[in-house]
Image 1 (cartoon, rainbow, N blue to C red):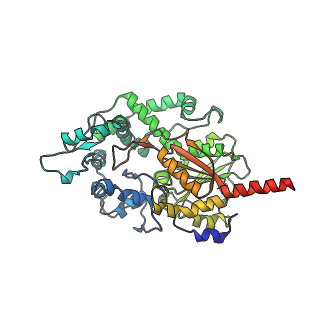
Image 2 (cartoon, rainbow, N blue to C red):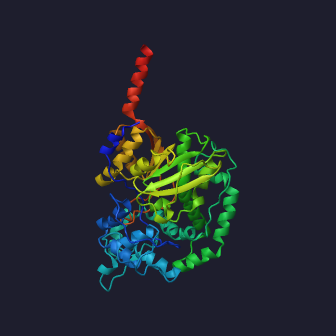
Image 3 (cartoon, rainbow, N blue to C red):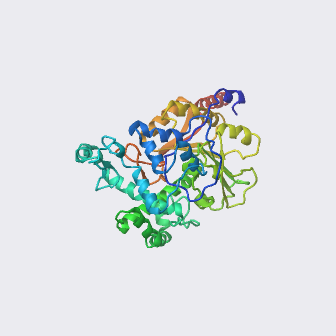
Length: 460
C-alpha cells in the first residue's frame, strides 16, 4: 500500500464532471445559501464556459429561470430552494422558457436582446433545435449544420420527452433477468431479453394522458409514434447506462460479487448528473445483472453530489440480493482517509468515474491528481468513462504519463444511445454518455518490479 506521506504531498481538491441541465426539480429541500467548496467544480466551470462561445448566454438562462445569480441556480441543482421567484406557473410556461434558453443564432451567436426590432430568431425547420437571426446566417451555417441536423432533431425530441422521467410518468421496466448475464453483452441483447415487457410499457406511455399533456404544453406538433418510441428507448438507455456500466466493469475485471458481506463500488467525482432526482431503486438493474449476488453497495462521492441525495453509509453487512445506493458530499481522498481507512466504510472492490474530464483543463487535472495517485498506489481496480474517441485518446495519454497499468479500453457496450448536444456550440458533433471506457489497475512500474522479482526468485 502507498505510504500516507506520499499521498499527502499530492493532496489537491477533487472535482467532477457533468453536463449542465436547466430542468427544475419537483421536490426540493431548503438549505442555506452557502456554495463555497474547495477546488474547481465542473458544474460551475461548465456553466460559465457557456460565455466562451455565446457571450451573455449564462445570464439569459438565469433570467428565464427567474433567478438572480448562479448561486441560486447551483442551489437548486444541490437540492435546495432559492431565495427569488424560481418556478413556473404552468407546464406551458416552463417549456417555453426552457426553449428560450436555446434561442441564439447558431452562426453569429447573437442573442434576442442583441437583435434589432425587425429581426427575430427562427429555428431550423428540419431539426427544430438551432436558431438563426436571418436567412443569410442560416445559409452560411448550412455546411456545418447539415452534418448534425438529423441527429439534433432527436435531441430536440428527447429534451422534451425527458420530462416524463422527471414526473414519473415513464417508469422504466425492471425485474430479474430471464437470460444469463453472459448472454447479455450490450443493448441489442438487453432489448431482446426485455422485448415483451418493454413493448407493453412503451405502448402504455405512448397512449397516456401524460404524453398528450406534454406535447400540448410544448407548443409544437406531436411527432409520429415511432419517433416517440425511439425517444423513450434512448431515454431508457441513458437512465440504465450507469448501473449497467458498473456491472460491465465488475464483470470485465473479474470481481467476485458473491463474497460474504457484499461488494462495494465507489463512484468518484459524482455530481448532480448522477444524483439529481436519483431514486433508491435506480440501480436495481445492477443487481439483476448478477443473480445470486450477496449484496451490492454503491457509494457516490463528489463535491457536487446533491445535498438531498447524501445519505448515511456504513460498513455493515448487506442483505443478499439487495443494492444499497448512498452518497457522500466531499473530496474523495478526504473520504478515503476519514472513512475507508478507519473502517467506517468498506474498502472498494471497484472504483468508477463517469466523465472525470481531467483532460479538459489543467485545473481539473490538478484536482484529480491526488485521487488518481491514490487509486494507482493502492492498486484498486478502476474504470473511467469518456464521451468521445478524442477524449479517450487524451485520457489514455494522461494515465500512461502517470504510470497507470492500463488493462483494457474501448467502446462501452452499455453506452447511452441518447445524443448529447454541446449546448453553446450546437453544430458540434453530439456525443454519448459513457461512450468509451478505460480500465486500469495499479502502476506499470509496480508491475515491472513485480515481474523482475518473480524472475529473480525463479532463478534462485
